[in-house]
Image (cartoon, rainbow, N blue to C red):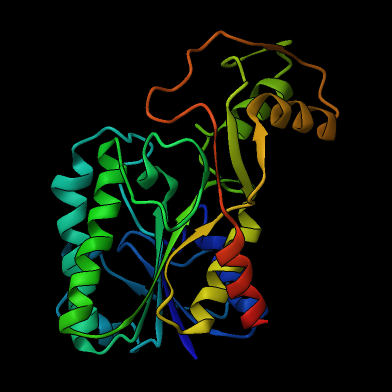
Length: 281
């Protein structure tokens, strides 16, 4: 089997490539023209082009892969930017349509828990999407477009709604890198929100493994949550990181307001993912 990965040099992409390599799967890293090769992945083939200006023969350039794991999306972490549906949405749909018309059989796309919007509590795939910011809206709109495209050009789609990921290589603006910078920089205080919000956090290595398993299944899976299924307060999470790393730092709770683009308590339903993973293993 041959699997291509867009966003291959990003936070999730580098871990997906590592997992593919560990399973001896032929992989193709799709990178921007300015990128030479993802570090640490000597066996993967590299194809260079901008998906916003993808050539008409993109599928051939990628080596006609059996599956595409699509992780590329620009404009983050500005979830409220109109860029997501004005620029990103049409460009991504054009790219997918071209690949599918050229023969791509299976597509695994990184969606987002923000597609659920301001709904609280346990979120299962059967709950209707109600996105409340441009990023979540654009992602869900792309999913809908692909469902319509399937009627004209049948293909298999796995739409992986990612919850909160952490681990090596994540953006510096994320919670853990910020905490690490402050703690290792010698500061005694870390400013944060009240920390009582409940979230669903998953190590990026586990998320990458799940994405590869969904790709190897080569099934029309539809929407599936990629999550831990276990809610944890941000306060407890941060305190755990401090203890685990032996940092000596105090937390200044309430310094920042709670985000207005997400509810106070939500986490993913793990049942569908668990069933699918058990089938593939």
